[in-house]
Length: 128
Image (cartoon, rainbow, N blue to C red):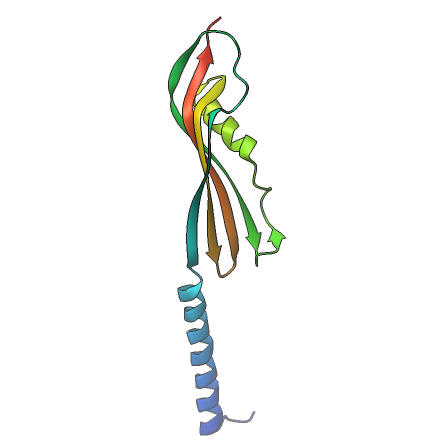
């Protein structure tokens, strides 16, 4: 069995150091590059209002998001405003959402993009 020379040992050690530096750099710089939030709209209600009396249950929020790996390949289901509205209504056990505001947030990461929609409003429940 052949023994390693000093040059081979040095080269092997440098190769390990370069790999370690690359790994540290990847984990250090794999963070968020930018975040932007844009208000998109305000509506009197999320669904058509029924002609019945109602009570306000309380303030609620819902959100939906979508992640694309390397900005191209979808990893999670598509962004869905209706899913965010449903989440807000179901959280309070209501029938509709009034005074609705919604915004879109975009986060750009080295490994991909996250886009989310955020819905906020007053949940109502119709009286029988």
